[in-house]
Image 1 (cartoon, helix red, strand yellow):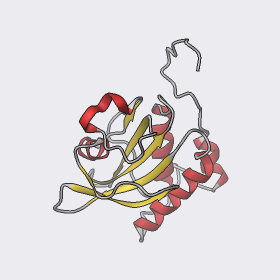
Image 2 (tube, one colour):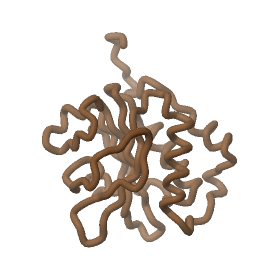
Image 3 (cartoon, helix red, strand yellow):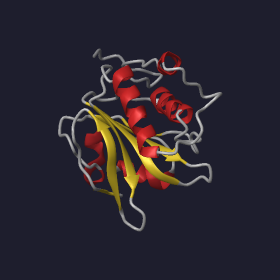
Length: 179
């Protein structure tokens, strides 16, 4: 990577989420109804993301779901390898769940004890909450990369739009936060 400063704070790779949606006949304007089997819809989202943009600097993608009455989240589905489960709410997935907003972490090494390291090679992370029609959140999409600064607002919006099109979320409840 060059020594030039990216004044727009863009991720180093631009991922084409509109083409991904179009290729699979999905639309934010005409989303699928809320799925009868949410875990199956989450699995489809993972398959579409991994198959469509997994080769663009993404090392891992998965959904974590908050356990009712617990301070933990469990892994529902993921690609391409296993990950930590259950995880506590002190990490970035827990923070995305609590704050109900996407979180873009350019360099996970800056997080200290707030980072749950499932793969020590991961350098950056994106957490996108799954927001229900009533505004509640009980799951998050978690995406990792071996590259520093791999994600930006475009990625948060693109992944949110895919989840909207699949009927998993109503969209963003707040603007993404950069850490």
